[in-house]
Length: 196
Image 1 (cartoon, rainbow, N blue to C red):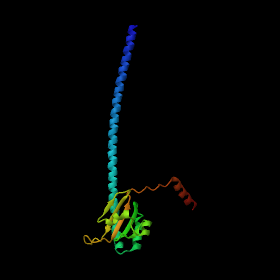
Image 2 (image 1 turned 180 degrees about the vertical axis):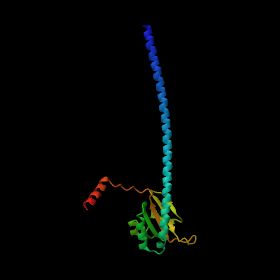
Image 3 (image 1 turned 45 degrees about the vertical axis):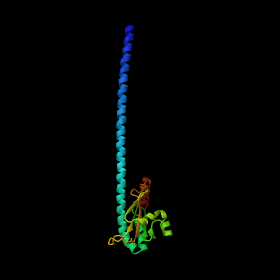
Image 4 (image 1 turned 120 degrees about the vertical axis):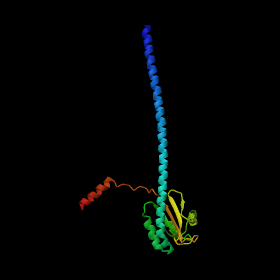
């Protein structure tokens, strides 16, 4: 009887020791996995931050390129105070993805052309936007989109010559995605073609 009790105790002790060792190893493994998971999450956050920074930088470069192209096209129209040509240029520019607003101002701050009807009606800038008239060179203003403003000067103008006017662009490098065509819309167009 003593022997059976001793053997049962020994089996229980072996079982408990095995279970204890397994539990310790499982905790170590779980701890190692958590550490590794934290490392991967940290790396992922670093990569995401870097990707966002690179995307923002690319958006700024893209916005500056669009601005430069618009400025070169608008300058002759602004110098000639050709309002109908400026209106056409602004309307055409608003078709470019990413351009949210575009305004061409005279040297005195009068609105020659623009995409904001309120600004066109009043003919003057809001005092909050006075920074545009104070720009001496291409200036960026952070915001929801990229705001760029610069004086319009002829390339042959002398240093310090007064500007012909100012160009103000609000640009978003990541315009909202357009909704993809639904399969139903594709089916509807197929049906109308078959009816013809």
